[in-house]
Image (cartoon, rainbow over all chains, first blue to last red; front, side, top):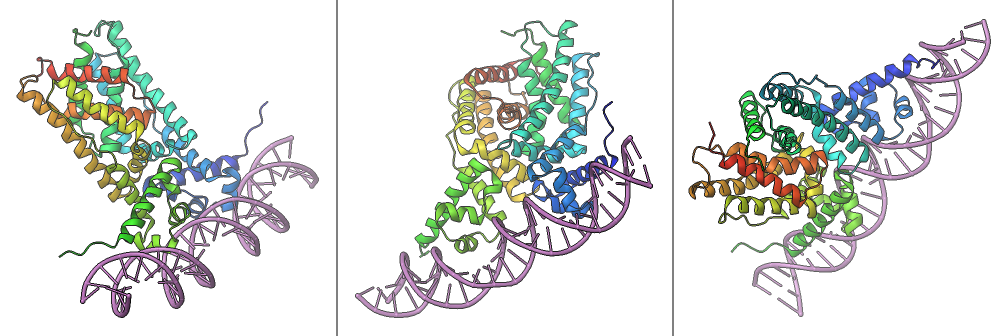
Length: 195
Length: 195
DNA sequence: ACCGTTATGCAACAATTTGTACCATAGATT
DNA sequence: AATCTATGGTACAAATTGTTGCATAACGGT
C-alpha cells in the first residue's frame, strides 16, 4: 500500500501556500518570498526552503493554487443564450470576486518568460475553452446553431473580451455588459448567412 | 529663451532606457535594476540613481518607452473591411515583431498594483480604441454601417481577441486568423437585424 | 579661450536580502 | 519504546540595494 504522507508536510504546504496567495493578491508577485511567507505564517525560513528550493517553485506553486481555487460547473441544457450567460457569469464572478482576478495578470506576465507559468495558464484556459465548446456543440445538436458554423473563433470571442476588459483595459465586468456580450455572440452563432 | 538641455542628460537617459528595454524583453521586469543597466551600458550606478531614484521609476520609464516605441498611422478611407484589416495588421505586427509584444504582459501585471503602469496601459489603449472608433464612424458616415449600431462593443472585440491570443492564451496571430476575425466583426457591424 | 556650473565616475560603506549548513527538538510511524 | 523524519533556530557567506563624498570631465555663457 502507498504509505500516507506525513501530516506535517501537508500542513506546512497548505499554510505556506495560503499565505503566498494572500501576498500575491495584496502586494504582487515580488512580495512572495521565503522570508515574507515565513514572517506571515511563523513557519521557519529553512523549512520553506526545503519545500520550495527556489523562488521560482514557490511562486509557481502559488500561481497553481490561485488557478485551481475557483472551479465551477458548466451547463449545456438550456438554449445557447442561457448556457453562455451561465458560463460567463461564472467567469465574471471568478474575475471579480476570487483571487484569480488579482493573480491572473501576474501569471500572464510570468508566462512571458517562464514555461511553468505558461503551463498553468494553458491548462486553465483549455478547461475554459472546453466548457464553452460544449455549450456550442450542444446547441448544434439541438439544431439551434447550424452545423457548418465555425465555433473556434466564437469560443475565443466569448472568453477574450472579459479577460481583456478585466486584465488589460481595466474596465468593469457588470451585468449590463454581460447581456450585451452574449447578445453579440448569439447573433454570430445563429446567423444563417455564414460562408 | 528656454535653455537647451544638457546633452549628457539626454545621452544617459537614452542609453539607459535602451538597455532597460532590452533587459525587459529578454529577461523580464525583474532583470531591470540599476545594477544590471549599469553593467549593460557602462553608465555608473550612482548616475542611474540620480536619474531614477527608485526602481519603480526606472521600470516605469522602460514601460513607457516600450509603449511609445511603436506607433503606426490609422486609415479610414476604404471600405470597413479594408480599414480594419489595416489597423489589425498594424497591431499584429506590433505584437509579433516589436518589443511591445514581450513587454506588454509585464506592464499588464504591474498595472495590477502600480497606478503609473496602469496609466501607461490606459493611454496606450485609448489611442488604439480611438483609431478603431474612427474607422467605424467613417463607415457609418459612408452608410456602410447603420447609424444605430453600437460600436463600443465592436471596438472592444476587434482589439480584445488579438491581445487575448498573444498575451493570455499564447496563440499565434497569423494572416488566416486576421482575415477570419475581420470577417466576423464586419458581419456584426453590417448586420441590419440589430435591436 | 576661459570659468563657473553641472553631470558623471569611482570608491567606500551600511543595511538588507538570499541561500546554505548544522544541530537540537518535536512530532510521526512501526 | 525506538527509529525516522520534519521542523525551528542559529550562524554564516554572498550578493543586492541604496547612500555619500569627492575627483574629474563635459557643458554653456561670456
